[in-house]
Length: 161
Image 1 (cartoon, rainbow, N blue to C red):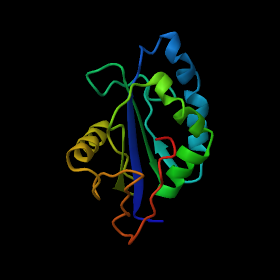
Image 2: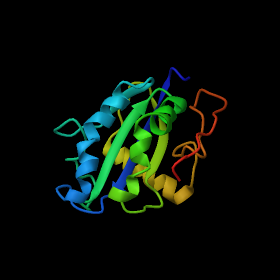
Image 3: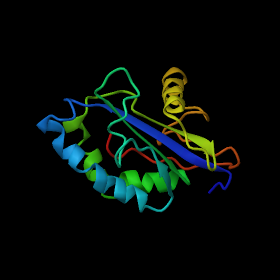
Image 4: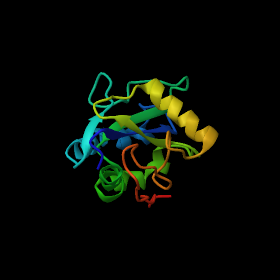
């Protein structure tokens, strides 16, 4: 685990309906409980919040149906454990109920410890991944890169793909 770097992640999704539509209700009803799981998970550092306890009121994209989630973790295994081996996995498996298919919806990158990424930084990392594929500057669970002060990293397979 790197002491000088932390792992930032952003994931986005285009909702199948507006936030007040009954189709999306179960997703929004579970945001706070899932965020509580994240915040109590080993390795959790920070997450993006808007006016409430989540980022659902933020609209960083022109399309108002695009939702964003961004967080910082101590390392890849900690984030992977939350995403794929906690109560979060139940909602990952249901994502197609609430979100349209997107080829690119998540990116990981290393930030200096203590840095809190901005939405603009996250958008730049998504664009970088889309343009270049996984690189040390923007990567995925399937093709991860170690922190700049580490030699190796193990991949975390996307069990929901």
